[in-house]
Image (cartoon, rainbow, N blue to C red):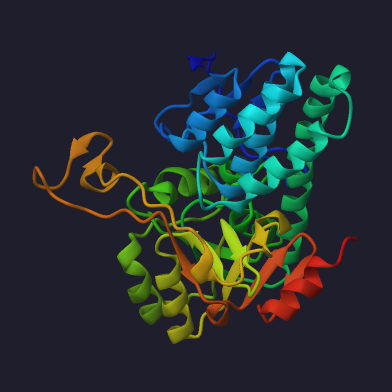
Length: 355
């Protein structure tokens, strides 16, 4: 992968615009904002092949389930530039192996494969590029719809906790959980947001807090192990998170630490909201127990940006995700409607709404 020119950062804007230029489709390449460097540096990596998109995804240059799906769609479009179906078929498994948990990746690849096979090779490149752009724009529209539906669930003066990064940097638009927060803020409903730092990769500290500050939303960073104390000693009105995969029974898989937050919210009587597009729902996975949980390198736990923070030779585990049982979830907000109470029947009913 080669490196592209770094543009100036810009302020977040209203819900109807694309607030953060995290992936930029250039026709012959995909420029990806390197999220590993935020907020210290804004820098782009240029991906010219599907394999480079897959590597950027695996290395967490880009992350966030919906954005992973969008990037994969563009990766397939890059593979189609040669005008041969066999090139697309060869690229698909490379992209599919990039991350195992986020089902949006699989959804995007299945969709793009169907597009590839739907017409002659003479129109393959143009057809795939158009399909990738539409896939991205669809997620952008989903973000706005979810944001407004979710904001309606909050009361004025809400103080909320969020975990990991489910904002503009994780999607095509304003985000899922953070999108709901942004819409609520514009409605005058947000008093303060408490993003958890999200160990070990610090997506909450580096990314979510950056987005909230850019949007002018009052925010106070907390360490992951402060959430219980905050719920006990201060007023918290909601916990709002995104998701990487939702099982058919409405169990929710999200960044590691989400399950613990859900238990805390239940104990303290705090509503627990999940915001995710319908592309995150995997009806072929019966329950959360069937979701593959990615285990990443222990180096990301014992080191911090390459600097050791544990004794030399220390062993560590790094589960990237956990599963929250649907019984602990108050509602799931999708672009097709709000799933409440979250269970197999209500999830299926909302997904059947195609309006």
